[in-house]
Image 1 (cartoon, rainbow, N blue to C red):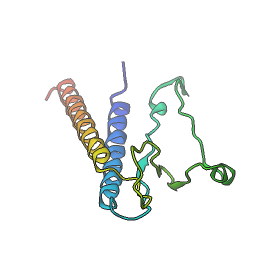
Image 2 (image 1 turned 180 degrees about the vertical axis):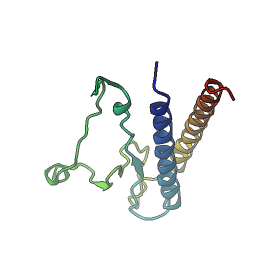
Image 3 (image 1 turned 90 degrees about the vertical axis):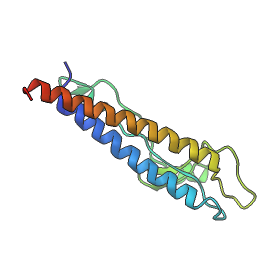
Image 4 (image 1 turned 120 degrees about the vertical axis):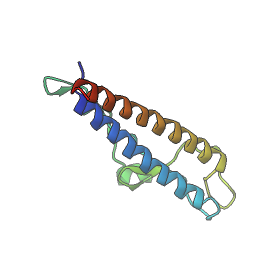
Length: 135
């Protein structure tokens, strides 16, 4: 049986990630006409800590830090720790801007549906906890 606190922590972490991702997508949209602006994305959270057995994670996401050598070979440098330049762009404008409004709006819709799912799961978990304590 899963630990309800871990589930709530996982849902909370996912919702914080989605809020940050929404902020970055809104920033991309706001800069859609800024010359040479690069669309950005947020690193997906690592929930492997929630999947533990006797204190050892079953799953671990690989972590790659961009080095100066990698940048020299053409890798995109990290912008702000967990925010990086989006490599999944459908087009680059002549001025170097990589923001495509259609892509950003699709991401915004995905964020909205995922956030709604997390909210529904959170409410369901709270209802189960209230039932368990007799309210």
